[in-house]
Length: 331
Ligand code: SF4
Image 1 (tube, helix red, strand yellow):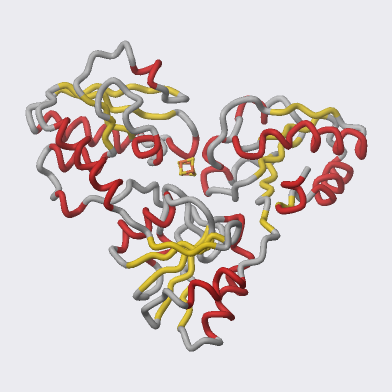
Image 2 (cartoon, rainbow, N blue to C red):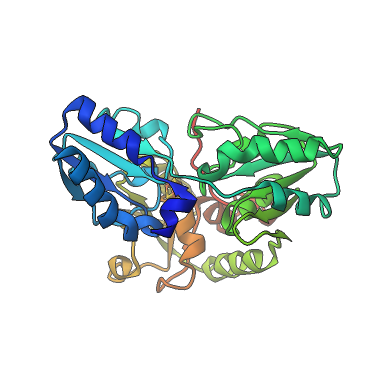
C-alpha cells in the first residue's frame, strides 16, 4: 500500500472519530486516483471499529462531488482527497480527509530557485501540499526572495491553495512570478491565464522544475471558439452536483444568447458525458458545470463544448484576449 506511505489518510483519526460518535454504518468516498486504496482502508476501519463500511462507487473529482445519496444512508461519511467547500459545510455527517502528502518539497524548491527570475514569488499548491508551503517559503526567503502566500475566497480552505475551478489565492497577493508546488499542469495553467504572470511548476514527486507553457491549450481553446462562431442553437449544460450547480449563470447565458438572436436550451444533469449529450441536436454546448470538463474532455463531444467566458467571446460580448479558465468563485 505504497500510497499510504506517501499520503496520510489519517486512519487513526478516522477510527477515533467513529468510536467517539458510535457510528455503525460508515460511508467512504474516494476520488478516482485513490479508489484502489478503498478496500484496504475499509478493511482496517471495519476491523478496528466493528462498524460496517459502504464505499461510494460513483465518480468523484472534487469536494463538489459529494455522494449525497450515500450521506443519507450512513451515520458518518469520510470524503478523501479534497478540502471542504463552502457548499458542503452544511453536511454535518461528512468529514473531509485532506490526504496530505509526506513528500519533501525542499529539494525541488531549491532546484526552482535557479529558474525563478523575479523577487516577489507567489507560492501556490493543491490541498495535498498546503502544509509544506512554509518549508518552500523558508527556502525562498533564505535565498533573498520575498514569499507571498495568498488567502483565497470562501471556496478555499487554506492559504496558497488552488482548485481546478478557483485561483483566488493566486490573485490575493501582489507578486511578479509564481511557484506551483505539485504535479500536473491544469492548476498552474489556470494561474497563468488568471494572472498573465510567469508560473514555474516544481514537481516534488519527480523532483523536476518546468515552466508553464500555455500555447497548446490556447490553440485548442481558440479552435473550439472558432468552430462555434457559426452556431445558432446552443445547449447550456448545468450540473446538479452541489458545488457545480450554476443555474443562475445558465439563465443569464440563455438571455444573452437570445439578445444576440441565438437559440439556447438549458440541459440539467448530474454526470456530463459525451453519451448523455449525444441526442440533443444543438450546434455547440456551453458547460456551466466543473470548469475542467471543457478543457480536459476536449474533442470527446460531438459538438464544441465552450466555457461560459468562451461563449461570451463567441457572441462578441468579451474579447479573445480576455480568455482564461472558467472559475467557480466564493465570497
Ligand atoms: S468543480 Fe471541478 S475543479 Fe472545482 S472542485 Fe469540483 S471537480 Fe474540482
